[in-house]
Image (tube, rainbow, N blue to C red; front, side, top):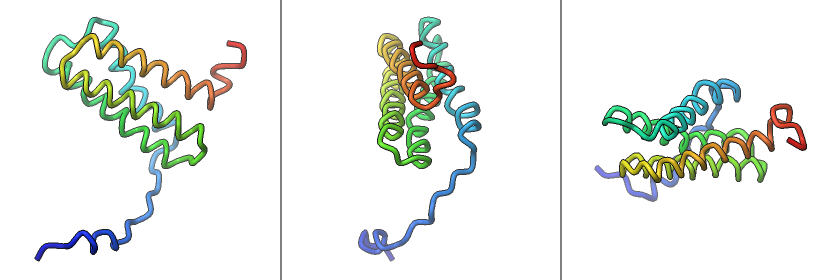
Length: 131
């Protein structure tokens, strides 16, 4: 028997609870994904299927990481920065899917800018005012 969309809409979803600390999320998920994209782009782009697949995985990880970050904080600036991460992850994913090195380089620049923007807002000890 098929479940109707009305029944699915009425089914409550369990509350989402973060598992990792922010530090763990940054060091073990977001940083490796962003770094893989940046390194690949700075070396001229992926050289083979395996490297393109690695960039694609990293890009999807960044895109979904924005959602994980939004789970943690509802402040408007936080959400805006997290959405920027999702958008640049999506751009990098599209570039990897198309095997478009030029688009990957452009996306890598946006990945770097996304990380720096958020860190300037939320890691002031890393980027003191005036730097």
